[in-house]
Every structure is written in structure tokens, then in C-alpha cells.
Image 1 (cartoon, rainbow, N blue to C red):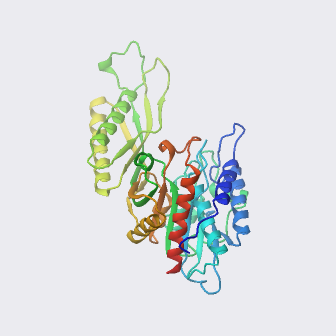
Image 2 (cartoon, rainbow, N blue to C red):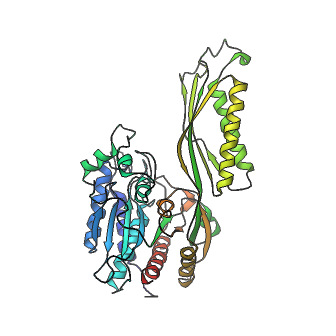
Image 3 (spheres, rainbow, N blue to C red):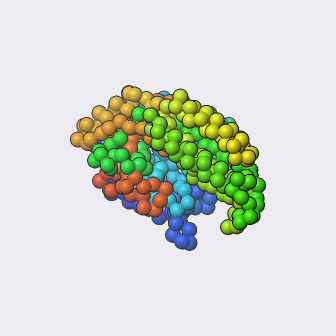
Length: 411
């Protein structure tokens, strides 16, 4: 099996076909979770799972599994591969989808080669990884890992007022299995990097050894609306200026951090949002990330202290709401080493690295040894139609996944 390679044409054709499904009238890829567009993608994936001869199972949160097992290994904890096929709005075609389709291709290649695994191999497509329509993101894998109850997640209200459970029923993907109906022996997720490191350093494979912790908050600053021309600067309670000070504080502190802290204010809205009125309210989100839990807590504590000081000095009222909080994840060292071994065996350069983005692997790592494989992203661009990884690099990553899966399934 050492010289076995995936069917490159089949993998690349499926990536392109899935990428063509779930587009709106403007041609944008909008396969957000539990939507009609998501159903189209799910239906095609299930068709490919069935063509490969896999048993298809869907759990209550809508996670899709393609299971390869036989009488000899049924009941053994499986090796699980996978990612997600839901997208952001106006997405690229590789994020998530590559990992699911490469996992399917790895299983198909092993089946066709007569490989006899000691344990089942499963490919998974998790629901609502992106979190665009329903919160939190990485929901399907979080529920599967037991981090949130299925009933609570199914009651999630979407940005459009829809209820996740009802939408899954409507599109035909409210499954009968309880989330977590099996426990993996190991989980490996192949993904485009979504960052510039591998391309910049001309390295073919990333062996992801850890994943940053994530802290999301929504900050609301209440000031006082007043006339923009007649109110002296010293007499203002300007929520807009206060918000700008928070943005500047976060950027400066992250830039000075001894660890790779990143801070982002990704959304902001003023009220009454008029050109000649001092803002009475500013509402914005804060995304803090760091691979070290202690440093992430320090950043959160520093923000709280700054907001308290700002409220007093600017004469405003500030409220912070927690939206999501995930601790950093350290992946399984054995699987990370196995990824490196497979890269060397394929003559590919490899480096260990941290994932700056959240992935389903961080949730599955709660219940099973897990790790990730990265391939380069052109220009580090993702969540964008310009997202791109060359075909040879996609194939190379899939072959590493194939090798890792075969080794894990032979144990």
C-alpha cells in the first residue's frame, strides 16, 4: 500500500462539481447551513457516498457519515476523516469541502485496492461549521462531541428567524441517530490552510499540532446623541469615539503581544447612523485568538479593565456579551508525527504549525485523538471566491491523508 495514490481526476472533478452547487442568482456560492442550497450539496455528497458503497448515516443535528465496515471489523472504534460542506456567503470552493471529498476519495482508493482495515473508516460532513446562519459555529461537531445537547442546538434561531431543527426536517436531513452514536479511534481533517504561511515558506504540507483559542464578544457602548455642529468636543458622550478607542487598544495590544495573539473588530454599527448626529450607541464584535490559554485570558482581562476605564473617562455605559469561547487545542502528537512521516515518504516538505482558524477537529479532539493536515492557500485567501489551491497541491494533501488513514486503520 506504500505506493498507493488517490484518483486525482475523480477528486478534482468532485471538488469542482460540489463547488458549482448552491449558487444564487448572482453566481455566489451561498451553501449556508440547512438552507435549500445546503440540501443540494448534501444530496450530491450522499449520492457519492452511496456510489462508493458506503453505509450512509445521518444524526439528529444533520451530520452526514459515510461508513466503510465489514463483518470482521464492525464494532471497532473507527478512524474518522472529514470536515464540512456548508459555506459562508460568497464563498470559495475548497474550505471544508476539500477535506470531506478527500476523505471520501481516500476510502474509495483503499476499497478499490483491496485494503482490509482492522477497523471501520468513516468520512464525516459536519453541520453548520461556518456559523453563518446559526450560532455557534462548528455546531455539528460540537454536538457530536457532547459539548452542547442536540435539543439545545436544534432550537437555535437563525439570522433569518428560522429554527435549525425545523429547517433540517424541511430539507430532509433531520437524522435518526443520536449525535455521538459512535466514538472514533482517531480523527484526521485535511484542510486548505486559509493563511499565507505554507505558500510564503514554499512548504507543501502543514502538520497542525495545535489550534488557537477563540474568544468572541459583542460590545455595546451607550452614549448620547446630539448635534454634530453645536456640541463642543469636551461636552460629548460620543459612543463612536469610544468604540474607536477600543479598536485601537485591541490592535496595539495584539501587535505588542509576545505570543501570536490576533484581535479583530469584524462588525460595527452606529445609531442613529446619521452624518450630522453624534452616535448614541456603538455595537461591535471582538474576536480574540491565541494558542496559549493563559495569554488569551490575559487579553480578555485587559479588555475588561480598559472598558471599565473608558466608561468612566468618556462618560459612556459599556456592556459586554459573551458570544463564544473555545480553549486552545493541542492535537495528538502521534498523529502529527504520522503526518510528518507520510510527507517524508512522499518526498514532500512539511512543517508543524498552529491553526489560526476554528475547525471541526478542535471539537472532535475532546473525545478522540485528532490532528489536521494543511495544504497551501494561494495568497492566504479564504472565505472569498478567490480562494485557490493548485491541483497538484490538492492531490498531494489527499495522498498524505490516504497514507495516514491507512496506517491508523491498520492498527
